[in-house]
Amino acid sequence: MTTPIADLHIHTTVSDGMITIGTLPEAAKEAGLSWVAVTDHDRIHPELSSPITERKGINIIRGIELRVQAENQRLDLLGYGVEPTPELTAELDRLQRDRKNRAQKIIDCVESDVGVDLELDPHEGIGRPHIARAIDASDAPYTYQEAFDNLIGRDCPCYVARKITSIDEGIELLQEACPIVGLAHPFR
Image (cartoon, rainbow, N blue to C red; front, side, top):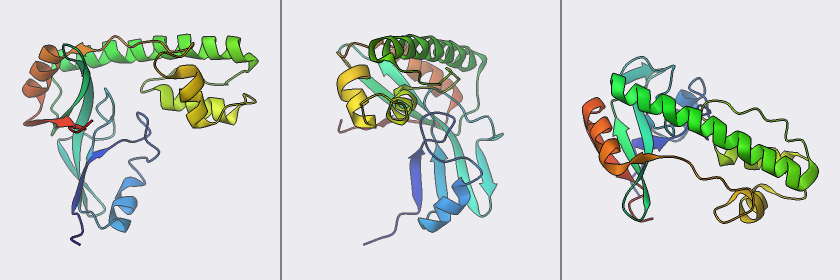
C-alpha cells in the first residue's frame, strides 16, 4: 500500500474541524503527509497569509470548501490556492452572518424544546456539529449523533436551513479566486 503524501480536504477549528493551524504540522507529519489543504467551510483560514505556506516542513495550501445550491441538490466545491477577491470576501461575510443567525435560531429551539442551556454563542464558522457537541455535553438526553437524528438534522424540529450560494455564482467566485476548483465528495 502506498502512503499518501497529501490530504487536500482538512477542516480546522475555524469551521467544524478539531485541529488548529498550530497543531496541523505535527499531525500531518504523524500521518506521513508533506502537503495538506486547509479547506474550511465558507471561510479562508485567517492564519494563512498566502496560497501556500510552509510550517515545520509541511506545505499548507490555503483553500476553501463552499456549499452551493444546484438545481435539485446541494454540492460542495473546493478551491485551492485562494487569493481572495472582493466579491468572494463579500459572499463569505454574508455566509458567516447567515451561519451565526441560523445557529442562534437552532440553539434557541433546542434550549426551548429540551429545556437545557447549551452555553454556546454563535461565532464565525459555527455549524451544526458545534451545536451537536454542545447538546452532547449538556444535560440533554442526546448524544452527538442523536442530536442530529432527533433535533437538528434535516426534517427535525430544530432544523433551520441555510441560505447558500447558487452553483453558478459559487463556480464564478472560486474560478476568479483560485487556480484550481474541484468538487468535494463526488460520490455522495
